[in-house]
Image 1 (spheres, rainbow, N blue to C red):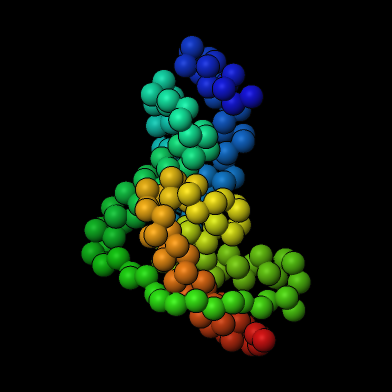
Image 2: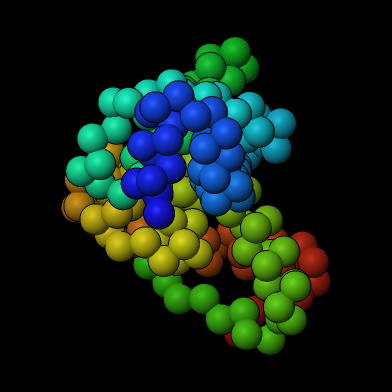
Length: 183
């Protein structure tokens, strides 16, 4: 199906691009917010990424899935935007934390779980948040995460490994602030 729409867009059918916007806008925003941590900036990143993907569609060689190619554009745009913001604020990038843990938040209701997961991802470093969102929430393979982020397979494993402990630590802190206990 996507091949048909790719062909239409390359042939100049701008309306055909609506398919890609409808299909990928939510995940695009999710990836962008994982990195930039700000809704306004995430919306800007997504808009720029869609424009670049439309402009570069003729260069898409279809050697990977469209989603992988497009998500890579979003990741690159998001990190560039983050760099601009960091330089503007004159703040150093946060280092990635270490180790691994498991998380038990089964006692929370579904809506609460989603809320606390999103709040935790917001306070994590962009690399950690992005890796967890792609691997666990979007259920992408390690190779797909590597293709999207441009990281080697070993770096993907290390970032996910470190991000799990970081997630556990941040979630515990948030739950303690909310006067909840984690088992």
